[in-house]
Image 1 (cartoon, chains in turn purple, orange):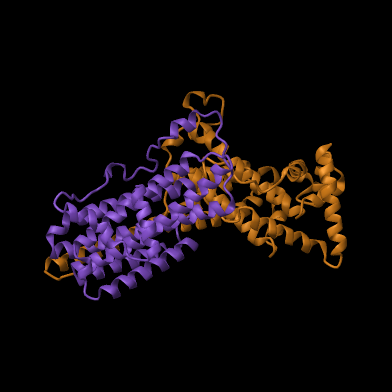
Image 2: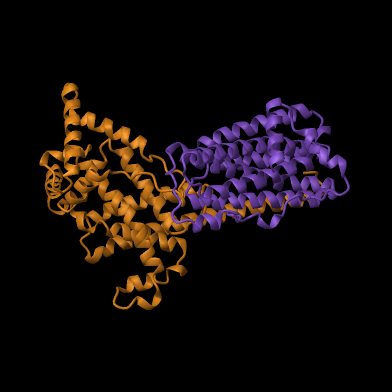
Length: 255
Length: 287
């Protein structure tokens, strides 16, 4: 976990796509690679058990700071944009699956697996939004239509285009989750420096975000294994999709 | 003694600001401070934490004391300055200390809205989670509520909306004046915000977990229904406001059947579209 985090950070500094580094493990042992690198059983759980949970509960009275207005706004926009993102991802895979599996039946298990994971993420964020009383994004219907269109369009263009779409989206999403995790950890550091306690609620949120980030990056690996780089106008597809993702993230954080 | 001293310093500072800005009429200054305070408090509903202490409420201590004392005079004197100064006197402050309450009578109205909304959460726990074996000696309504676990979300919404309307019954004869104050252009945003908070609270307490576009339509329709039921209630002479409850139920049923019809249409369109797509795919079309 730590090494992959520092890897991502150094990659972002250098401004390179994290392509070769993520391929590296696959190059060493290509045959032993299975579809999933994570356990899917905890997919839908909102609060994975944290190590410090019982300890914090046993403590006499944890000293916690009220969240400032900025922190509450950051948390609600983070949860809102994550829900929108996972909704879009679910719809992209839903729309991609029929044309893609029709043309390449061997992709069926992979597509089902990636869809299952995304649906689990969407359930997680839906539950978090309802629990923390965060409103969904106003642009929900817009993202639904655009994501379905994107998924279907790239799948009709062919396997490589569909995988290039996955690659572009997951790269953007991985970066996005990383920046959220970093902001949360900075928040924790600030509290701990002031002698306040960080509750299990936010620690679990960071844990959930890390798990989901790793699963998204696993999808990125799958896309690269399936010749995402061979898509015909590769640069055009990926840059358009990435720009679209960034725009969608920007808008969903606000409305 | 201590609160009085703090109050005096506040009054002095308030007095100096009014003397330095004497060209400005006081109501404007009052609304300006109110706007500032509004934007600093939770204007928009944001992340609700269960671990961290809640952010400070809408009123500070002195305001709360004066307003809660003044609220007891509302049935007699209405949402007026008279009630406020009587309340200030009851709370042990000078009559002039109503200056602490920046928006005058509107603060009193807001106090009613906020306190009744906040009272809804304990009330809902009481209605929906009451153990079945201790319902003897209470109204049949509460006994029915003991089966709260079995109620559907729309039924819980109806029950909670009704509870909130009942909370108006002590001041309902004064409520038209309050509605007139709330409808003043400078008060409209704050009033609508309170209405939105109320419908959000009701849906939250009713256990609604939907986070799709229906989140917005549900809250908007409940706000409309609540506002119209409240207006109906101000003219309701029936025993126990039975007519208001019937009105509320009719409106909620109408919305429910409309939502049901729209949902059915959407389902039919979706099914037909996917069936058509699958027929085309089975014919070999590469889509």
